[in-house]
Image (tube, rainbow, N blue to C red):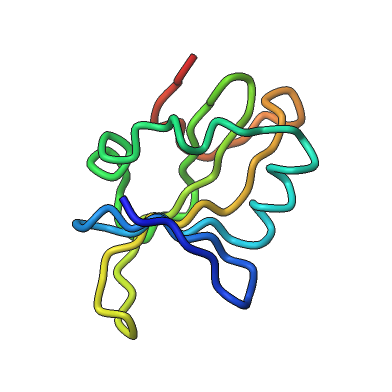
Length: 103
């Protein structure tokens, strides 16, 4: 895995088959809420489980909802797993699809 940051504030983790893209919004929420489990997530299992181009999917991780999107980036010609946001699990009851729970 190769990890790097861009000038626009995104964090990238390249896993060869796909790239995890953590948006600036998610990076902010991660620091605000002291959520530092990103490196421990089973990215390959999440990538295999998520539906393509469906932003209404989330995973519950240690009491947080992590909203994800799996898409093909035509400009960079690669598959990406986009981490959109982290919210506390008790904030709202989402109608989005729960994909996985990680304790």
